[in-house]
Amino acid sequence: MKKNIDVSFVMTVYNKEYYLPSVLKALLGQTGLENPEFIFIDDHSSDKSVEIIRRFTQGIKNVTLIANTDNRGISPRINQGISLAAGKYTRMLDSDDIFPIDSTQKMLALAEELNADMVYGTFSKTGKEPQLLENESMSHDFSYTYNENALMGVLNGRFTRMGQLIKTDILKKAKGADERVFIQDESIPLRAAIHAKGLIKIDDDVVLVPKEIGNFSGNKIQLDNDRFMAYYYTLEDNAKLPEEALKLMYQRAVSAYWKYIKKTKPMPFLHEGFFKYLAVKTHPELPDWEYLKKMQKEFLSLSGIRRITNPLYSLEK
Image 1 (cartoon, rainbow, N blue to C red):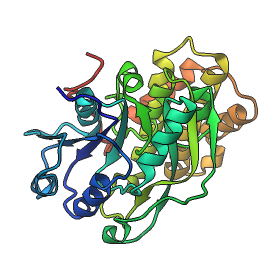
Image 2 (cartoon, rainbow, N blue to C red; image 1 turned 60 degrees about the horizontal axis):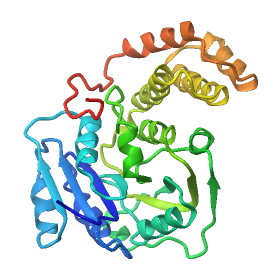
Image 3 (cartoon, rainbow, N blue to C red; image 1 turned 180 degrees about the horizontal axis):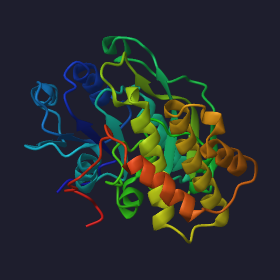
Image 4 (cartoon, one colour; image 1 turned 30 degrees about the vertical axis):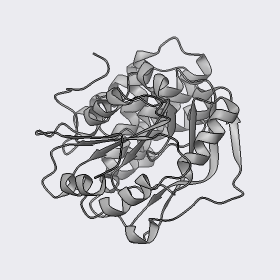
């Protein structure tokens, strides 16, 4: 059994052979950590992703590689990794995102100093080849803010990439990823923040995004759908949260629907979604469940949206 792990890194992988050499160099080269572990969950890649991970991690201690023989999707694989995490903190990453080599060290130091359960920062879409980002560091003079109320910190912030540092017991208490949502960039921090005490926002890049090829972020309707579902299911599961939080989550759900309307409907500014968006933006209100279910029904009717139809590793179990 692994002991005294300071940070567990959980990476989900699916056909990212182009990025992995650079991603792994930056990940395995994270500075200032005493005893990290590295958990790689492959979702049945058809390229050389698993072979590359095995080659780069040869001789590295505390490495777990799960080469799954079926494809389940992002959320179940994240939960599969979280279930194995033994560290005090967990930091998740996509297999095409690069961490500045000192980012975890600096995030961990702040978490310990301020006794915060969650730390996150900004990211940049660099447009650069991944090889040019392998040895990047954070700024020496970055600023940060601390919010004792982690949930309000998340609701008033913007979580749009993986890369947060979260206490592992908080992540497991939150039951990991919501397998009803395909992309977890907003869902995981939202679920974790409900149980967390203290959140730090660093005003510097903790994730560097290289030149993108075939990324899910290109499917803007998928992002609108997953953003809406993240807030819909969190509202459904947590009706007793403070009213201020419920109002903000409802506002976020309506906003996601409005972004979808703008992309898909003729004359969107005459659509009821626009007027509802204006109403909750200017006068926040408690969730209108009739309207929420109407929006959900429309999202669920969309074709071309990836969903987890057969959850397997949910921490809900």
